[in-house]
Amino acid sequence: MRNLREDHDYTQEYVAHVLGTSQTMYARYERGANELPIHHLISLCKLYHVSADYLLGLTKEKDIK
Image 1 (cartoon, rainbow, N blue to C red):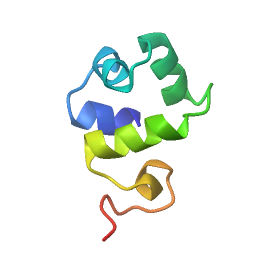
Image 2 (cartoon, rainbow, N blue to C red):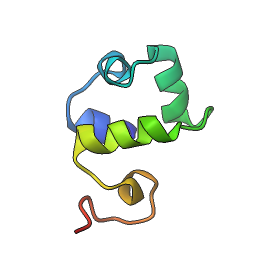
Image 3 (cartoon, rainbow, N blue to C red):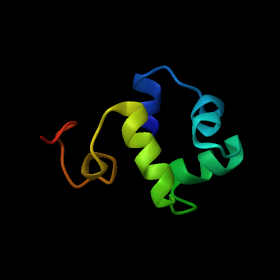
């Protein structure tokens, strides 16, 4: 998640705002200290235009058709 965020030049604060959570909680998601709720996973897929499999590390492809 961090690499995607940095590739898009987004701050943790911006992504947290999109998700409707705090920057602190989002940072915990990035570090793996907290599990990412499914509704946040869906929001991140939409934000970055990637598949859930890609975000979860199940595929190297950004977009699965």
